[in-house]
Length: 229
Length: 229
Image 1 (cartoon, one colour):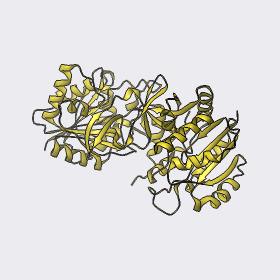
Image 2 (cartoon, one colour):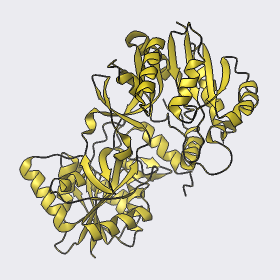
Image 3 (tube, one colour):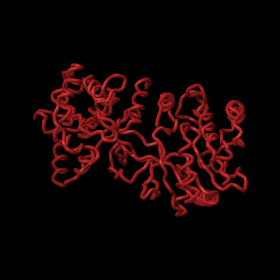
Image 4 (cartoon, one colour):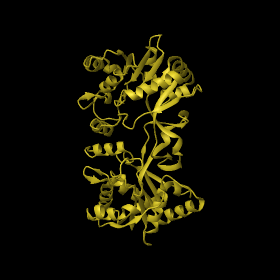
């Protein structure tokens, strides 16, 4: 099956101080986005990759990441939108017609593994839609005005990550519907769920963190030195 | 105000392989529980500490942790129950009558800071009940049979941590009510919430992890070398 990855990396990175956007910051001497793309490139399931970057960073991304690391699976680096969902939509629009499966993976989650990719692709091929998630071990509460509203039952809750993977025609329908309805989701699966398509959940990893703050960057640096099983 | 800490450290640690219970495993050459207790001891707000340990570990805990590190604020090491809630209850029963504020903090959260302690004590003194929590950045979904049921609105959700702090009479009432009703909560605040007492939320930290798996232990080792602001 022809499987393409869309990698949204268009975030402004406003939560991290400094001029360099977080996807271009280095951990262990290599940009976060380069690590993400190298891990995606190493997966035999993935045929091609489309990177969605801020317009100001496209040439730099091509030069310092794609060319620098010889990433032959990267098909193109295109300009992102004003939201994550719009950026993924632009990536989707750039796919060729004969794509069967689409993987979406955050550019700022460099610790994606081959096992995650295999299992999410396999589940999406079988069920049409699949996401990675991990169990919640903390107590989760609903908060309003810095005061507890309620405590949720955590047994049935999961923290969702990327990669997420979908049959092309399902994600297409989900994105069209969201656009029509003006619905904005925090992940792609939430658009698919609105079609009443069932979404399969496979095992993510606690190490598969999203780098959005300066602390995350320090944590990521430390994670590089840990040998997780 | 007379402020005592109860530190549940009675978990069997079944999720971590090996014979040594997780609270006694070392990170950076020091047992997890010793780190937790040293950080609590360093807080000027805390007067005394009651540690709740498995019966088989009490003498070892006294010898290798309390005596070894000269922890003068540790009032006693008592035997735990079969659940976390029961263990905290035993700790509560061991408090003297003149205690004003009670802090509950997991023995396996060694990265508690002085700032967290100050803010949770201050908020509990003012409002009667306070917890530490951090914002949720991941998408949270309800899952059943490895399939998505729904996506929650994450804006209003928080991941709850310890320390949690309460006026003595409020926690007392909450624990009595829970016992009567046979209610088992995943944290102490959930017992207080059942009284319709409002619980204030103060800022925790992403680094304030709970060590429950072998991966957590590796992560904790790495966190030791990070200089969080």
